[in-house]
Image (cartoon, rainbow over all chains, first blue to last red; front, side, top):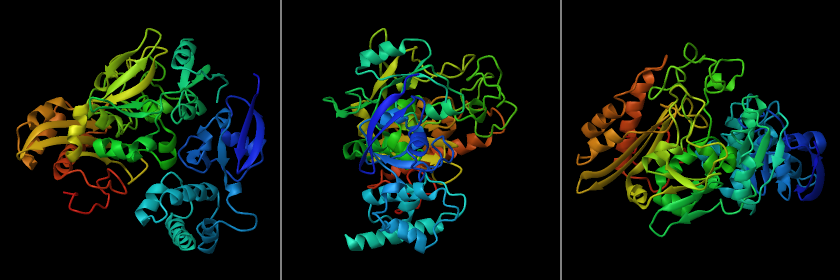
Length: 159
Length: 351
């Protein structure tokens, strides 16, 4: 089967790759492009570990075919910090110990950023609803929710 | 995932023609196709990608007061469209009660209609399932079946349709627009899904190669906007399929019910409209006695298909609750956790 040539943008950088029709975007990000920050959990759209944004829209990259990336703007966890400067969400997650094993964390951070872009001042219920698609098997979510609320408050002050 | 040919048509006509080849499947968001391909339940030889077709992604107000929703409109975009959610609040509430943010951002209107059942035996290729492998039997009958159908099921299949979205749509008289090799046609949503009977592998009236292009809601559906709710009971407060759900819509004039709509989700292989219950409500006062009677009528034919007799009483209660909440009035703002009986609502809507 002929591979397809895809031209796309990842974290603001132009990227080209070759893929098979049955490869997911997640597979190409991790195995072809070496962007292993995005994780594979379930592979069937349930757990959110593979969350990225495609043209600003939060999606599960395990359920996006890599061929669909043609012409798209993709954002992954690797683009979240600006050089050595962590995103406020990343910093609060560290300060407030909102992670244990870390497998769900990149997806949670991408998801939380997408939530705060739409709703900079969410209630706790709204944070829990917004992050419902990101499963964590370690922390029980309370620390994650608190860190997102704290980061949101800090981001509102600095705007 | 199995290997497949990938085709990217530029028009609906090209798509229909490409999908006429046996072994083809349409790909929209893929949220309920790629997952099934990964576990070997679906094995299409050709995927016809709809994501580049023009003209299927609009929410269009119709001159007669109805609305046409293109098949590629994403669930999140429809739920957040201010005009749509104001006129059809129960539909928006149902959309927001389904899946997760990621999946609502991806999933399309057309794909939602064509969701496959979440019966675990359907999803497990080592189990017998007449829906997946006709004639192989039904392991759900003697298996884990507490969430299975209580209406319209057959000896061959007791699976349920998982959609939230379809429940208020069927209550409100939605119509499905279809393109196909034999030309365009339209089918009321109430007639779109098929009950299993002896052929559970036939899930809808779509013929091979036919494509859902749009959904229409008639103008009269907007007449229920002031009293329309979707209530969903699930095993956790968000991100779970309905155990049972109900969409209720009322038009109340001079303290009496002038028109009523009621449909149930999670109870059958299709979204279940309860027309006899609707008829019984017309002319009644919107009170507990009328809602109780309507709920009894709606479930009159129900019978357990396994360890799920509890779902019949649960469905009655959810139907009553949906009617009571609808009568109390559509909230100004959808609850942050929409459609859950456990959602922290203010204003006494818990009833």
